[in-house]
Amino acid sequence: MSQSAQELLAAETMGEAAPYDRITVRRLCGALGAEIGGVDLSKPLDEATVGEIRRAFLDYSVIAFRDQDLPPDRQMAFTEIFGPVEQHPLYRSNPIEGYPEILVLEHKAGQFVNGKNDIWHSDITFSETPLLGSVLHCRACWEGFADTMFANQYLAYERLSGPMKRFLDGLTAEHSAELLQRKNNAHPYNKRIETIADPIAHPVVRTHPETGRKSLYVNSTFTIGIRELAEEESANLLAFLYEHAVQPVFVYRHRWRVGDVVMFDNRCLMHYVVPDHPHDMHRRMHRTTATGDRPF
Ligand code: OGA
Ligand code: MN
Image: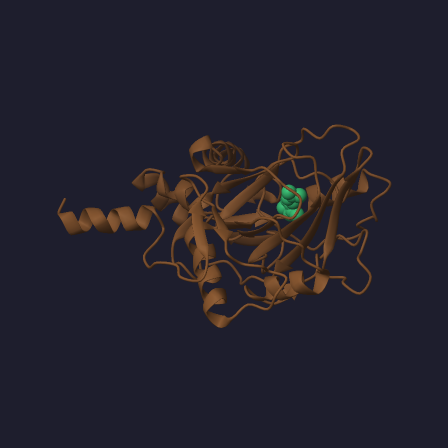
């Protein structure tokens, strides 16, 4: 390998094609994730800073800001950097007055308002246009419990063999909110979800609309089957893909602190909340989401 090719590869794996001037960017692990410093998200941001935040988001898929204190309107403004803010299509519990777009995820004295998220998933893939990404602002937690894990689905795809990639490239899968509805309605303190939409098909391998990279796009919460295969073939292939997709080498585990703001790219990641909550732990997340495109 020539010197320059080697340098190029190093720059690529470090995710830094150009330097950052307005923010500091510290990689969190090999798989994905960066901690961003030098920004107070409660103040309006200039265009150059917004540009660098957006670039870091595409380079690292998860960007984490520490020690922030975002009132609802500033969380909305931050989310809008990435796209229009949309409301959760099904959950309605526990709103903040005047901000129906902010979903409050809360665990209080043994109750998970809106359910637990201890199954690997991408958000809202049962929609025709699943989310671009989500912002989670931690308002209460016990450090070291209920960490959130993120798995890089670009890498999950790239590490497959050539023939397997080519096989998956031609397939589509159906996604449904069935399991979410069942889980939500099992808890009497959640507002019931009465109806859900018909299943929707998405490619098993999607292309990121901004980076152009391909990623694996099936998840064990919402994907119900691969359309082109027999039922048993689909079930077995999905089981393999779910196991393959969340290997430790693809995963970053975020240990929450009050004041964290984490934005994650829902187009190329799956996530999972570790269910190790002590019964009396209080955890409260303010979650906002940016609208995505139809996967292709
Ligand atoms: C979600 C989710 C993660 C968390 O909001 O979609 O999975 O850490 N939450 O609460
Ligand atoms: Mn989720």
